[in-house]
Length: 155
Image (cartoon, rainbow, N blue to C red; front, side, top):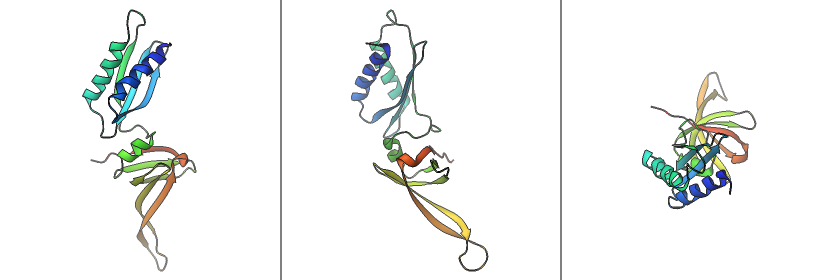
């Protein structure tokens, strides 16, 4: 069993006991630096990261293979990768770049297995007369048409 397979197996065991958590990214470089990014349906906290880290570290032997381990939550500025991440961010504003080179900043109002639905307001020229009016917009975007989606943090 390769080192990466051993780490993946230990991670799978750790996450099996925590179904609300899920893997966003796992990477192991040539120097055996293990980087794990996690997310959760209800967010993730420091204790979650510590628990997963301990499970993995306890299953590996530094005498056999030296390594460093970093377990972290997916950053707020990290692009969304999984349907679970879209679903947990319903109600928040996203910045979505599509494969058609569109860029939309809007509120995520729905996410299902095939697509997301965004709603926003835009200022457009009036149909009759001069000036602009505020118009409600809505777009359904299939996941395969999303190049990148990032949650917009507002304070």
